[in-house]
Length: 278
Image (cartoon, rainbow, N blue to C red; front, side, top):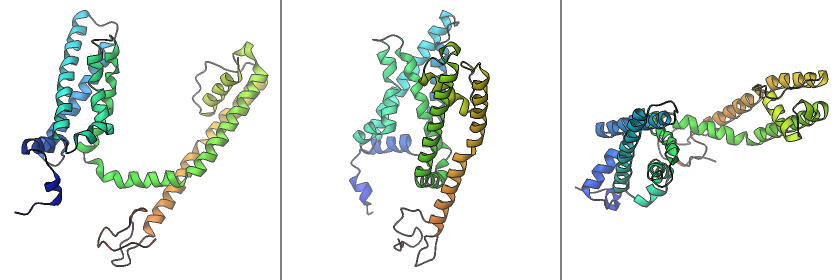
């Protein structure tokens, strides 16, 4: 039976290949079960770390959570070792984003033996919940995510101009409020006043700093109204970028079979393999 080029280049032992299919795979029932169990353990471990930080917990519960955390650490350590053994290229996995995250999920527990308190860094395990997309087969949305990325890239100049305009406005408002209100009303410096302007224009309104004079309140009213007015601007920019990206995709038709809607960076037709124009 002839072997493919990929299978010939795979020098892993059969048991390592089988281990990799379970840990990194998605199609088999064992792989899907492994991912689901792992996600459950990730959520449970993050909740345990958060619960351990509550000051009102009894010593008994703190001891239980501490033992549970060490149990999670042992499981995730075995998972990391299994990924190193099951990966086709262990060094590439170890240096990848998920490889670094997987390592960071187990290091804090061991560091806590030397530096008490570092176990709370284990909330980084929440990053591993990104694997939930593999379980629910959300890869079908990859094409739409690429379209959104193309729209943002195409709109980067307009977004930059918008950001600079808003930044200029908050600097002007902050400087004016510093001159009008002064330190006696909480506007102790221009950066502090700019912070107030950002909070006001973005309609967050913490209320920790507020103008007291009539002119200051008038300018604050203008800033708040302006904040509501500019909310729709980024949405419009991205919408125009999405439309342009869609038109760019639909405009690339295969000269051989006529299929459209190709990716902007595609060189060959995804149906017949013909070279695409442009």
